[in-house]
Length: 205
Image 1 (tube, one colour):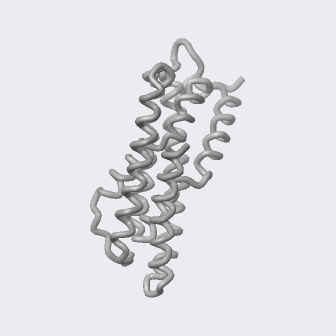
Image 2 (spheres, rainbow, N blue to C red):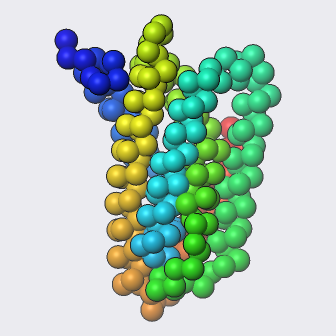
């Protein structure tokens, strides 16, 4: 049986990669945020993608520290994360609606896209559930479990950055073509409305 550098056998690692790709490709707050920022330009889009990938490392740390046990013991903590995440999505949606001027040639957000990307992912309860519920199962118990979790988390972060950077670049190309049309403004409203809807749905789940 082939063993990888961080002590996990290849079959388990490939199974994890398959589950990770399925979750990453599923439309959700991460993808919608990167798509919206990508329409504003390549820089904001890619920065937001790497911010979200960095948020994955936060979930990895929580899993390694045993946060799943905390959430099982104190369900109010999990509920708090859910509601904060929902409120943040609504905030992003409202902000996008208020700032509806579309100009992909202007990239003045500095590190805001990266920081917001970190928060979008860190406050995403679906990602938290995957990491807290499934990561320990893939990593196993006993000696070296922390190292295995770190390796799996880094893999998930790399896959996230790769996919969402592609989304950002695609959105940038689309935004450049639509910059002088009314479709661009409509897309901004659609993206903002989707984040609002995701926030409301998340709060009601």
